[in-house]
Every structure is written in structure tokens, then in C-alpha cells.
Length: 505
Image (cartoon, rainbow, N blue to C red; front, top):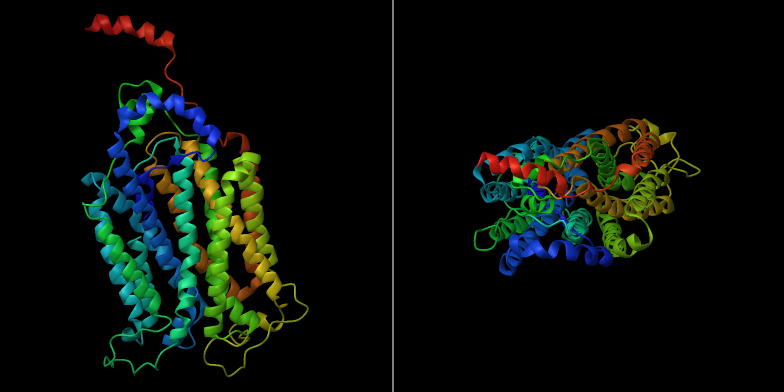
């Protein structure tokens, strides 16, 4: 859905003083751009986009806490490397197919057909995830395929609306990330369900348990989203290019866009920093269930229930953080808040998750056939020599990432959108979203492999160093993280050109 997010556009400053300052400049041409009825229709469509971003983020995150115990139930003894592949398949599908879907939308002149097609695929892939017991003994491959298809299935605003729209899109994404595991935890009372029949026995085709509930919730939300994108509700409108043309005094939208070039250094630095930020967040959400089962000897149901409660608390913290962004930007500059509030706190989350305990983590019984009940030293030899993670550390680390990621993901997209200026931002926003997809695809594979083989010290130590490097890079380009100047052509030049046009005519 990255291509869709870019096509929606961005905008509105939450700072009341900026709104007052810009209102006089923009008031003369607002009526030229759209009528009041057109504006209401446009924002109704934007709200549908907000719901879509929430639903797609939730579609990725709702299985994060349950995918490992679900996989271990389907095929006991599965390796953690498969966990990384199953989680990473979703953003990989999004990364590979977003450009194709964007091309389809551009060629057809409408995003409706690609949206409806991908939402239908989302519903089918979610239902497949809930029916994986029918695919045994090859369930792990079908799980990867189902998550890949969900990823495959994964509007316009004014400059004066920039921060508001980006903040709400970011809020929708973050809430989707944190609410998903909470919904998975809410399904924990359903239990693991009856034992699976032998492979090939399809006498019980439909299952509803604490693992399959995630897929059915996705399918239901996808169906609702499909209905919202039907023509009677969702309307498409392009407005950013027209605003850029009027603001710069150009004769055509194409001329206005060609004269407005984003700064490549600041733009690509923000793209790389966004990659690191999402990488850190996905790292902790991917490993949370297996990490707590290893470090605290939690069972599968305990891990789902406790992590769901923790992530629900994280959702509350995220909402409070978003509510505080507006007031905070009145006292602190957005760029400073991004560095020292977003990236520093996210890096500290990795530091706190490096085990500091005096002894090793609790060890699982050597004859255990399923995950849970301690650290499995047979498949993870580092368990016997590593220090254990304390619950206090883990809670502090999760609190840091809940605040840091919420601040960072909002401010980095807001600053990035401002750096690009008042232009249709589909291509650049597609690049930014692609970086997020790449980190969500590579992150789970990397961390599951590193964690399984090297332990939490190497895993969280490497992400802490990566976050510090991103913070330093942003500090180096700090002065360039500004919007481009929006000034019409100088009046003398316009007068010099007028006689030439008169002669030509």
C-alpha cells in the first residue's frame, strides 16, 4: 500500500501560528483549487485512506506474537529461521509489487481498480492463514505464501494540511502495529483448539482458535475496506500539482514541478534513517514472543496474553505520544525532537534489551518437543553461557521504543514531506515506504537468524549501533532538513520576457 500512501499526498501544520501565517497567502487561490463540497468529498476519501493504512499495518502486526507458537503447533520443532522468513514475506510482497500496482494506477488514471484487486487478495490470503492446518505437512511453506500474498495486497492534500495528514497517517500505521498484537491476545481465551487431525484429513475444514482468529479478523476488516473503496464512497482528486503551479506563478503543472527539485542529500538521508527506525521496531515486535518464552520461561498462551497486554499498553503510550507532538513542537524544533526524542529513545530500547542479568536465562527441558518453558540450549547453544534478560529491562526497553518509534515515524515523514515541497509526492513517498518495506522484510530474517545463532547480545548490540549511526547522519545534514523556498519567478524576469511573447504573437 506504499504506492497508495504516496498518491494520497500529505499535509496541514498543527502549529496554530503557522496556520495563521499561511492562511493569508493561500486564501486567494483555495477557491480556485476546489469548492467546499469538493473539499469535503476529498477528505472523506482521505479518511478512508487512513483506515486502509491502519488495516494494512494491523494485517502485518496481528500475527507477530502468534506466528511462532502457531508455526510450532502446526509443525513442532520448526527452526526460528522459518519465523523470520514467515514474518518477512509480508513486507517483501509489498516491496516487490508496490511499484507494479503504482504503474497500474498511473496507466489507468485511477487507483480504484488496483485497490479493489489487492483488497480481495488480502481477504483470501488472510483466510488461507486461518486454514493452514489443511496444508500439513507443508504448512510452513503455505504460511510463508499466505504472508507474502498479504504483503502483495498491502487522494491528495494541500501544503497547509501537511503535518496534520502525515501525523494521522503515521498514527494509523503505529496504531495498526500495536493494536494488532492486542487483538491477538484478546483471542487467547479461545485456546489452541482441538488437536489437529492427521495430514490429509479434511473432516474439520474450519477452525477458530487463538491462532486462526488473527486471519479471520483480517478477512473481516479487508471486506469492510473493500466496500469503502466502491465508487459511491471513495472519490479520487489530484490537487498538489495545481497548488504548486499557482504558488510559483507557473503556466502549467509540469513547469511548476520541473522547477521544484527536492534536496537529494537530505531526502536520501531521511530514507536511510526511516529504514533504521522501522528495522528497530519490527525487530522487537518479531522477537517479543520467542524472546519472552526463552528469557522468562513463559508458555505459548502466557506469551500471547502477556505480550498482548504489554502491546495494548504500548498502544496507549503511542496515542499519548501523538497527542503530545503538537505541544512539544511549540517548545522544541521538529528536527531536534526527531533526533533526541525519536532516534535516541529507539536506540536506548536496544541497549536496555541487552541482557544484564547475573545468571543465564531459565533453560528448557532437553526433551521438550515444543517451544516454551525456557531457553532451548540444544538449538541455541548460547543459552547456557549468556546472561539472562530481566523483566525490568525488557519493560523499560519496550517503553522506550513505544515512545521513540511513535515520535520518530511521525516526525521523519513530516519533515520528509516538507523537504519535498508542495508537489505530488507519490514517487518519493514510494521510495520512503519501500525503505520501510525492505527493513520489515530483512529485519525479521536478520534478527531471527542472529538471535538464534548468536543470542540477544549480538542482536540488540548491532541494532543499537545502527541507530546511533543513523542519528549521527541526521545530525550532519541537520541544516538541510528544511522545506524548499517557494517563491514565484522574479518580477523583472517576467517583464523582460513579456515583449518576446508579444513579438511572437
